[in-house]
Amino acid sequence: MKRPGRPQTAHGLQKAGGLASRLSSLTKSPSVRGSSTTRLLRKAAEHDAVWLGAAAVLGLSGGRSARRAALRGIGSVAIVAAVNHTLAKPAARSSRPVLDALPGIFPRPSTASLPSSPMASAAAFAAGVVVESPRYGLAVLPFAAGLAYVRAGGELDHRRRAAAGAIVGVGAALLTCRWWPVKPEAAAAAAPPRRPAPALKEGKGLQLVVNPSSGVAWSKDTAETLRALLPEAAITVFEPGDDLLALLDRAAARAAADGGALGVCGGDGTVNAGSATAARRRVPLAVFPGGTFNHFAADLGNQTMEDVARALRAGDAVTADVGRASSPVRPGTHPATDEPGDAPEEFPSGEDQQLFLNTFSIGVYSELVHARERLEKRIGKWPALAVGLAKVLATGSPLSVVINGRPRRIWLLFAGNGIYHPAGFAPTYRTQLDDGLLDVRAVEAGTPLARTRLLLAVLTGTLHSSRVLTTAQVRRLDLEVIEGEPHFAYDGEVTEATYRHLVLDKLPGAVTLYRPADQEQWLR
Image (cartoon, rainbow, N blue to C red):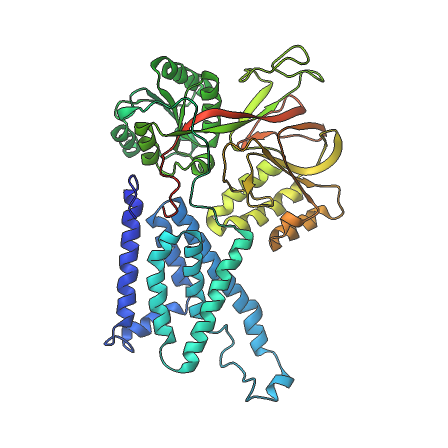
């Protein structure tokens, strides 16, 4: 299925699928079976390095979902290799006097590896890719099927071993879901705005602010792409020394005067500032994926710049909640008012509050996220999480806090703007942007051997049921730091805290966001 706005991904998928089909047909050709080509394929399949190459090609052929599929595929191969070297080989080489006494019933394996280890690796890689992204799995499966045909040919014993290897490989791919649950292809659900967003033909009325320092590869090609997609948009590029908040405010004011929209292209910190400005000025916001990780753009469903341009031209938009952290002036008083009982302003301004689109956190959570993201692309998300967690727990200190009137000692606290998945302490995605809830997760330091138990729970995938993790879904949270450095972080950006008492709540449907109307398709 070809989707508009994704020409590069579709071309990469078609190219990879064509190559895999040719390899599959080559192995099935009667004139080639038993030839040097088949022997070469057999030899290559015996080395797991071939799957590293396949993962590299897959990761370069598409976008974010292709990279995730490649990581899951190679992670599945790593599980097969680990089982082979730590369990299968030692077990095959060990003495077994009872079984060896009955060689006719329990013959000793002819090899010290898993049944058809190459077949297990091939099945693990293909199944891992299919689990993460069915559309890229369509490109990988023909190659794996061709290899299976080669490996299963010949004697009955070979076919049995190939089948057993395939079962082991598929099992390894499914096992990755315990540590790394599959992210749905569909974008997070959200309601349409009460007042329709304006359709900006050719981008007329769009005030777009680009922040190259957020990780976007701002080049001549990027600029030309945006101008080709939205030729009448006004584009402002943030330069060193500029005041980003002032740039956004001026752009939003012009958009409000023209009946248009504010646009931002940058990382989550830039999107955070843009959403606060758009909410205050009451203008729709167009979020272009221009940062390193683009967490909010991914949840929203804006995978490419073409997606956003398509939504702008059609006027397709949804509303999303915004999280808020406010510092009470005195007990019983909201920071936006002077008297108890007064209704708070909807979008108060000042340094006594901060909005967040993704997450709020205190403690070592922000350090953990940065440590994980530095390693994630090299070793995968979950190994990076384990290494980063061990590092920050070894160097960090717990906080003494009061949460809703109850004293606690915690290592970290995370509050998500909406319910995040998966359970545990590596939240990755949301399925709804307007549920009205805060997803609160805290790791307690008061339980015996808290650090050790936390690491073991992460490594075994049982953190969601561990006693060191406390979770709740609430509409409001009162938080006061009694002892320790708070290190408040909003959408991953650490701020210098001038206060130690916060009230977390939400502004329902506070911001209107452009996104294409076709984000509910299952195969993308």
